[in-house]
Image 1 (tube, helix red, strand yellow):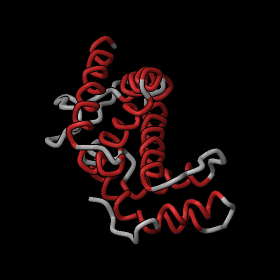
Image 2 (spheres, one colour):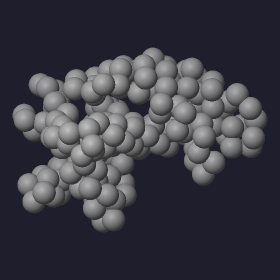
Image 3 (tube, rainbow, N blue to C red):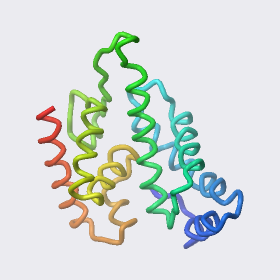
Image 4 (tube, rainbow, N blue to C red):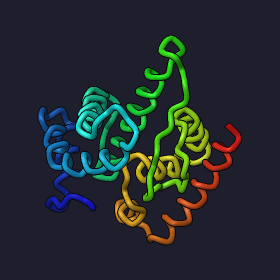
Length: 186
């Protein structure tokens, strides 16, 4: 569910933030906070990060990035999804270093599993697979991040990108097939 705002409000605030106006990125986060928190909560089944902590860490990463140049809601949500991915991968690495005992971490996805994997996903293997997908098709990598990490429905992503549901469905099927091969090989 996309948070209702005035048409162009997010784009306008991001434009002002790029121009150096202080507080505009904070306003974007305030407007999208309920949506980001809902999406983060849906993704955090087996994580030490709570949804609030994940969204806050996502904010810190985005706010301290000097190279963002966020253009609109779609670009913002893509960047937020990448930040959430980064937080979760970093969390996984920190929890599973050899000095802390190592071990395998699974991110259980539940019934609404975006990747249709019942047993969970190894975050490092998924991160590597997404990096490989990015080399082939950055738009498909972003689609996976929006759907898997940010929890957006394919219909919402199609709306954000201004394409048909069928087009997004085809792109999702290709990205998912690529990731399955990558994950099965790891």
